[in-house]
Amino acid sequence: QVQLVESGGGVVQPGGSLRLSCVASGIIFHSSTMGWYRQAPKNEREMVATIRGSGPITYADSVKGRFTLSRDNTLNTLHLQMNSLKPEDTAVYYCYLDNLVNDYWGRGTQVTVSA
Image 1: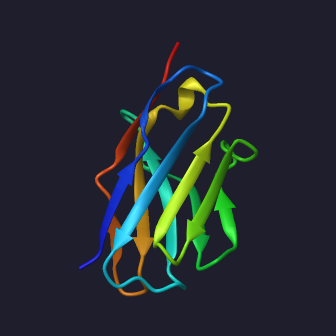
Image 2 (image 1 turned 120 degrees about the vertical axis):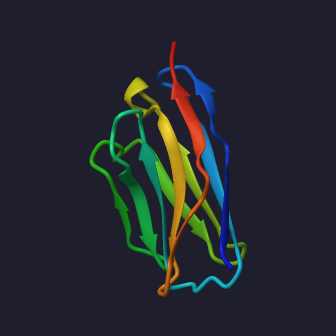
């Protein structure tokens, strides 16, 4: 059974930074796709950034140049470095894994960008 555990959310002022982490446990294929999605109140869940295997990485247009996704296959971890945060980045951020057979989601971590 695959489990995803997120950490690193919190409250930050506009222009600030946060680093989200996701640790995956279970049988993880290095060629699997991992990524981050987010969902703001009253909005649909949207893709933030994904990585297939060791690359390539896809970013949502709204976060390009501000967010950086990285993956450590040795530790089965995924990180999202978020810089220059804006109030519209406020959402619950979910870690995602497509393990070639099933999809998995973490429980989410709240990110709030507010003055």
